[in-house]
Length: 170
Image (cartoon, rainbow, N blue to C red; front, side):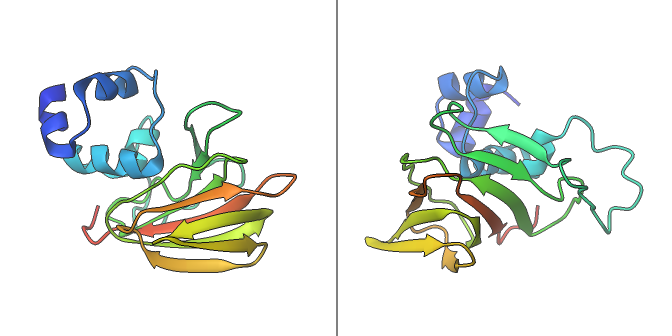
């Protein structure tokens, strides 16, 4: 598949896709999902070097500290993701841990539904022109095609458990 093919299927520019392919750009998780969909693979596949040899595809155990780490933008400004259950093919849900960027707001919009649970810290969550302050143990479930964003407003880290559900089985 060429970069042009992926551009046609995602609407992302060939230049951007080339930078992602060469590791010069780290896309947000929703964009990774678009690219994975265009390639006909799960987003988690793009984060894993080799899924061959998984002993039992009915279960995917992710030991502490062993999730696939993905950083977007830069350490100071970016959202950092740790994907969970990367070794489980055919899943509808995509679980991950996200460290919300402090004082940085990026708007997301992608197919499916999403659930967020605040593990640590405090964040401002915006959805459909409404803004909500979320603190530890708060959660939200929403249609993720509606533009949404979040930014950390705690003095320390803001960490979330996030689960994306894609209507198309991956």
